[in-house]
Amino acid sequence: MQEHAATSSARSRRATEPFQFVAASYLIRIGRQRATNLGELARHLRTCPDASIFYHTFQSLESHHYTTFSSDFAQWVMAACNEPALAERMAALDLREFVSIADLRRSLVQAVEDHLRSFPPAADRPAFEPFHFCEAVEVVFPVELRAFTLAELASGIRRLSLHTLHYHLINSRLRLQLKTNDFSFWVEHSLGLPELAERINRVDFYTNTLEGVREEVVRLLESWDSP
Image (cartoon, rainbow, N blue to C red; front, top):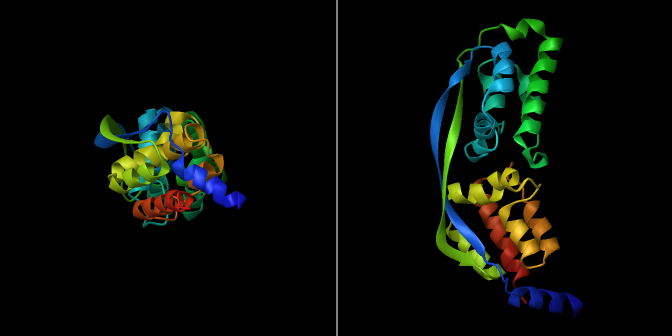
């Protein structure tokens, strides 16, 4: 009886501040830096723009759901340098644990430098192809779509492009400087539903496609929003 009342209350709850959906798109720009071996990768990782670190890790999740490694760096280390141990270590960095590019950069650099200390000849061994550092220029603007209830949030999420879903669910972790996403943040702070917010935040975007992630988030919202 108590669970029914809590769920019914959640269904009828209306936020005073709406969730504002946005439209997001990205323009990809190739930078000046490129690496032809692991030594050069380590040097450029220390100095490349934050936008490059972001693009080759957080942003690359959008295109690497069907590949072994979730970051461009790990993919290149494996495919072009044939260094599986280092590739696995770089891929093992869980982006859900990072709230700043500086921390992520340090972890990437440390992974490469530790590997090169253990295997010095790997530093100058030529890669099969160079790694080009790129970055994405983010273009974001609000749209008319807003949500005041869980049902409206679920409906809006169904209509999002994958770029925008990625923006609200994955890119937002750095923007908020918290280990959360836009949906969970709003559900907790505007609707007062921390348990649901935590469940949304636990949806695994590593081993699922973005469409699969969308369906799981919507299922959570709709099941919570039922009597």
